[in-house]
Image (cartoon, rainbow, N blue to C red; front, side, top):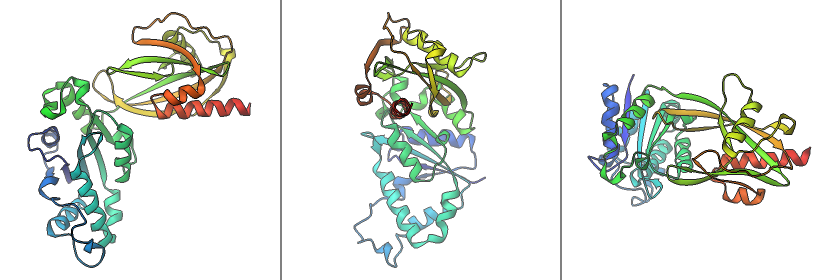
Length: 317
């Protein structure tokens, strides 16, 4: 199996190069390519001659000819100010130029298995979109390594000093993904929605009560239990309206394992909800707020989609 590891950092001793070397320890036949040594100039200075008859240069042609022979490509991309590095942008420009001239190789390149490691602390949805641009179809093939999670600084290039990071990377390399299922309580009361504020990695997050589905309970029972445990609000099975569209999130769990969690939202209607004292320490506040306000302040786009679906469902009913 031919594996290529693309390093999109210009730093010889940075996090990305350390990650590349770590992968190579387990993929002995892998070849590391430092993009800084191949893609040195951005497009444009040549008047886009590649769109006519000329090649982009021998080193670029050699790079992509090698990539299309690979069975697996790792993309290791650092974040600068929440965006991809300039080296990645140059690479992507050269990619479009190459396949404009050599269209016969484009399908083969798209079919190659690709895995993405982003060294980033935020703006994750943007990076998922970057992976999608390169035909990544499974979010399990995307890993985020955040220095802030491990109380480190990206600029120091010391992510791989953490055993937890090494554990996470190893699981990612060998596709050892933890799969979980959770129920989410979407509780509507007098045109307001029950929500929680909690602290996640030192950030205050506005979302809805949710949690793991136990082996001996149904989805509805799990949503009712989690609503009581997280929001200290008792709802009943009689309040159940419908089960909404599930969605999936990807993250690193408390055991430092790449995790794929399916969240199943359950809609309840109860016009007599009362806010009580907080039970769980990690929950900072419990509120009943206007739905429009929630949609403005909610921290997650997928949760906003759930609430919009809930509103539409109640309008139809």
